[in-house]
Image (cartoon, rainbow, N blue to C red; front, side):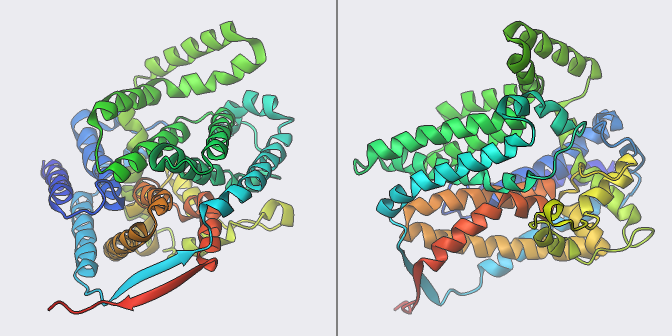
Length: 450
């Protein structure tokens, strides 16, 4: 009963902190952090306590043995969030003595000149990626088997790291065409915006992923909300309804796309209905999809530093190491945290079960790692808050990068995998690095208040 009370109280504190804190952007990275933390470390454990461990996802057969068996877990989760707030507030009260002013050579005219080359590059790497499957059609046909791990392709898998370049371009072009609405280069920008949408549809088809399309569309909404300083509730409610439908029916729908490509519409419809029936027979709740973080935390508390060595944050180093095309170079990958977590929860060592942010911290330094990591993550969040404001005041189009980092900062709560984060944001780092190298920065000393 104490566990239930602590998780419920944590949820109230998260909501109170989010509603009461001062915000420059109506939706920011702290909002995303609070959303995911509430979802996986308050709402989900409350649901598991009230409805039972049968909700735990099937890919964690040993997970039932962990949840609820550590009487201190709720206290650790509760304290972790307090440490996060302390880190955020500690950095927030630091006096700012300088104002960041910058200028970049990446003006709209230069970006327009670069767009043809960027899209040629994108479609070339897409061709390279699908060639290992035997072409685009075959890649779509095998998408479900590839995602499930039934078949594996590794030789050209590293080119996936360049696909998010399209997301950056999609958001930038959306900002220019739909929000800024300047007439200069409008036709060219609109043309490439449509090309970005086409590329996103192709990626959705070969990934067979609900999450991809939800996050792509969510980005357009958040960027619009920040720019107009308006939540647009009249659009948000139907959009949220569509997102819920995608979560409920998206998996059987996207997995049936291969049937559409192979055999036609009738096979697609039958495949969708059959898969939907199987999901209904499993009687699993949506909540099952969010049980990984809390169960992984319980698992890490039971094993890390006891019968599994502490990892001392070496997973951050492994994340950078993973950027190498190891299959082509013949380099053996080290055991990643996600593989270890999966081995403990599933009984086999494959990259599948994400530990969540607190599980990640716990695997590094046990309970003390949870507290230190949460405090530092809060400090980092406060630093980003000030940096985002400085960039947005100088250049409104920086909202594109602000959103992508914002979502990554919050989504890491759910995932807790530096390897996934760095691989997926590799191209973002490259683009940001290029912009920084092509920019001049001045730190102007703030004038004292009279």
